[in-house]
Length: 328
Image (cartoon, rainbow, N blue to C red; front, side):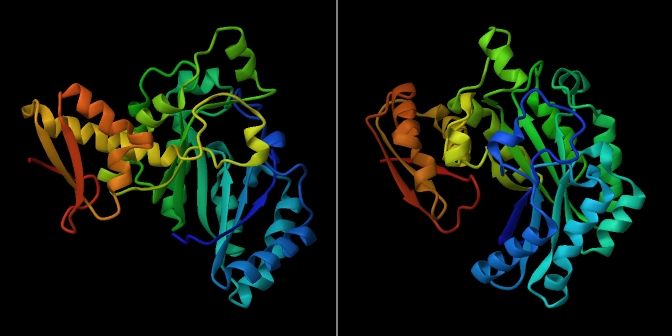
């Protein structure tokens, strides 16, 4: 997928429900842009990123926006698509706002990637989160999107109210064979229903460490299923940081999640070791993930397995989360 994105935020546009975790107006753009402003954003983005970038509409349910406004946004991008400045368009929407007619419209305007906010595949969790759609809606929409030749991205959240098994959602999302996924451990934002539940003691929020651990389990499963993980955790911004009440919010949450996978692998490999010193080999560029934030992995492993020391080295032949452990 195109790594160069020109984002346009349409905060809460088209969203028929107020999800318990959501306050888009406080964490995205303060107001919706006009089509002419979208054109200006594209022009600035192309000047910065160069030709071939992808335009992405984020923040609302794009296909549920009033048709005239939606078409106005898409039309603003057409001159840039025709002259090759844009490679295509990416939109984000709800599973229950997809139809064959909508997909025909999007294809005609150059939309190539559709992100669906699945969030959970547990209907009870979706109900408690006031999502307004079902897991079955996600299955139907995902299959329709893929059958029409679009790239499919599914977004999931970890730690929503009532969730007992996030890996159930991971498994069901993987079965839909998306081209990519986004994993968002829950963050409690000001002025949301979730903040009310949290302050009333009716919702136990994730810590960044717990969120990273659970996200790591999901990340490992997706990557083992050859599904790209596009992002782990909300993108930290100055505006968002001032709105966070609690939850799995950390500027390096993705790195922490990958580090959690390395910790798990190391524990498995060290099962036959006790005492002494060891050399841990990882793939190129993976040392910091193995070491962990503030050497957390090293400290945990040293304590658990009563090791004198742990040294890290890198080997070109090791890929992904592969590690080797040798006594020294």
